[in-house]
Amino acid sequence: MKAKILIFSCMCVFLSFQNGTTSMRGKPSVDLVFSDPCFSQNLAFESGEQLTYKIFYNWHFIWLSAGEVTFKVIDDDDQFHYQVIGETYHSYNWFFEVKDYFDSWVQKDNLLPIRAIKSIKEGKYQVYDDLTFDQTRNKIYNERGKAKDDIREKHNFQVEGCMYDMVSILYYARNIDFSDTSEGAVFPINIFADKETWPLKVVYEGKESHKKVKGKGYFDTLKFSPEVIEGDLFPDGAQAHVWVSDDGNKIPLIIESPLSVGSAKAILKKHEGLRYPLTSMIGD
Image (cartoon, rainbow, N blue to C red; front, side, top):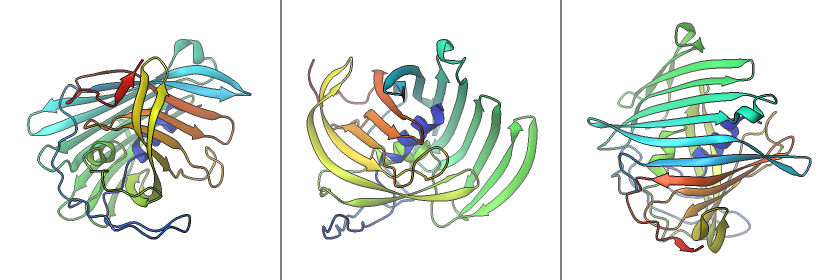
């Protein structure tokens, strides 16, 4: 199991930065007015926030504790520096060792990414990917190789509209107001990763109360079903399921994702530095 599977699910959980939705399950389409995709006022988080998730992998009906993923928000003058670290536990490394690092820098005044770097080591696979965003000219400059000192590819990509990377879309979307969203609405997501734009969909499943989060208690939540990319890791037509705290913080609490072999789950282990009290927690 790869930690990036759960990291990817975390990124895909939230609503699109585009306007409008399409219909699903026979329900009429729902028109929603979001803020300008090139501008967002941050009301959901602050510097110093840190979220840690414990990752589990289901293998032949046995849940294995595989590793952890930690999301940090760091103050960097007029920017936020988002940092994501995913690592397997030492006891799991005999099966598949993972050390993944994601860093994204965004402007505080609009939450648009300026630069995004990922450095991945998963078993024998290694990749270093450095993106620089020119949001004014809708261009992305990319350097890619096995490591920072081993760049083998350089690319310039033209994209449509303001674009986000896998990490920055998470924090942007936490500032979207879900209060008038109808159950069953479908939201498109476009993120730039691995040399291309990924068009995916997220279904808003509605509110779910008294959702148990192991080790934390019961929560009022918002539930989403993000589409995942078909291929070697995910079966055709697969959808993940994500429960988000129904409060001002809008933090993911549980992420469940089917895999081509087995399934994976991430559960919030600890949190600190939240902007607001976790009022969605309703009991132990």
